[in-house]
Structure formats: C-alpha cells, structure tokens
Image 1: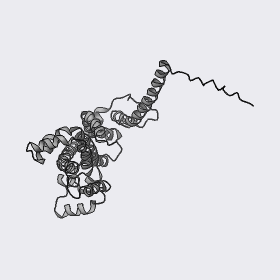
Image 2: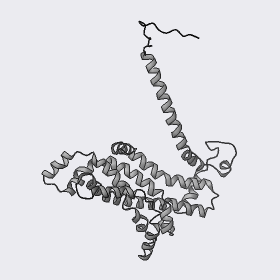
Image 3: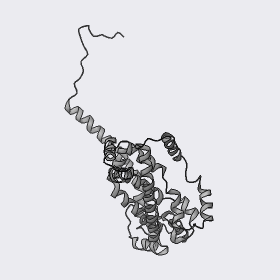
Image 4: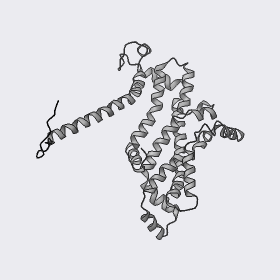
Length: 297
C-alpha cells in the first residue's frame, strides 16, 4: 500500500504542550512516585506495627486464624509486666546505652583527627593510608574475633564492658565518612586560622568540628543502630546476664520463657526497640543533611 509523503513545502505539525497537559503529567508522575514510596514505607513499617500490636494481644488472639490488626481483648499490662519481671529488661537497655554511647564517643574522638589529616594535610603516604582505610571497610568483625577473644581472655577482661566495646573503638567507616565531609570544607578558612596562630588541634576541634555536626549525626545513627543490634560479639565475650546488651538479653529472655509467650517476647522487643526509634527521630534532620553533604548515598 502506498503512503502519501508530505509535499516539499509542507512541515509536520507538532502539537503544542499546553499548561494543562504539562500539569497533568507532573501530577501523574508525583502520584506514581509517592505511591511507590508510600508502599515501600508500609512494607518496612508493617513488621514494627505488627510487633507493637502483638505485644498487647492475648495468647488466643495471637494464634487465631483470622487476621485482626487491633486486639479485641487488651492484654498489654500482663505482657509488659511479664517482660519487665522475668528478666532485667531495663538493665539490658541501660547496658545498650552505656556500650553504644562510649563506643560512639571514642569513635568520634579517634576518627575526626584521622579524617582531617587525610583530607587537609599533605604528608608522604597519605594516599596509601587512605587506601588501607578503604581496605579496612572490607574486614568484618568475624575475622579478628578469635585473636581478640584470646587476648581479652589472657588479660582477664571477659565479662566486662571493655570487652564488648574495645574492638569497635576504631571505625574505618567513620574515618571515610568524615574525610568526605572535610574535603568540602573551605581551605581558605583553615589557612586564615593558621595565620592567626592556631594549632592544627585547635583548628580541628574549634573550627572544623562545629561545622561537621551533620556528618557526626549521620555517623551516630549508623553506629548506634549497628552496636545496639549487635549479637555476635557480646554472645562471645559475655555470659553474665547483668552485662547483656539488648539482643543478648532478648535471647536470655526467650530461653527463660521457652519461646512460647509471644506476647511477652514482642513486648520486650518493643521496649528494646523504642530507644533506637527515639534516637533516630531526634537526629533525623541532621542525619539526612549529613548523608547528602558527604556524598554517601
């Protein structure tokens, strides 16, 4: 079948994009994007919602066949009473706060000067040292676990807070994150501070660090979540119940309850998860700002 070709003097007509059609496309795009984000958020939050709801349900409702999001009979007082009475649950949470807090403080005190030196100072071997920092990100805690355990055992430091915290005092991820942030800090300000007679120590802690709070907040969230949820290392070095961190305490509680009282178990999980949620909500704004400013996606 022959097709008619446009005459030499004719041109194809392009439909102009009207403001109404452009607005419709934009609204459709926003609707699709927000729909995907809302669906993803619901998928992530559903286990936590189910944990909180289960913590206030009675045993027959937990094992009921029919699905009900809200309990018909409120049993939260008994479940949370069992969770707080069977084992020292608040002690586990306190241990988590102590361990995570001390680890975070030491990590920041060590990582900030190292990151500043790698970002702003010129010295031989700087590139090699940064490459070693990147290689350190590839080494999990399971690799040096055995020699660390043997060393702590010989020193008689097992079943102590120090045994839980010591392997994590140096964070190569913190060095990498802070270095990325410090690289964008203006060199002119640092040169002006040097001309004013300030030492490098004063420049780091009095000038650079106050502007690095978004990066510190971002790393704090990563560090707190990682060490609050860590079970592997405390399980190796701790056998005393009163020194147990939240995940290890949950394991002790499950053993005490034989894993059958799911209402009390989810109540304990809710109590131990709440501090993390509160910490994230407090640092949420700084966390997002620190992630975007350091270029870590």
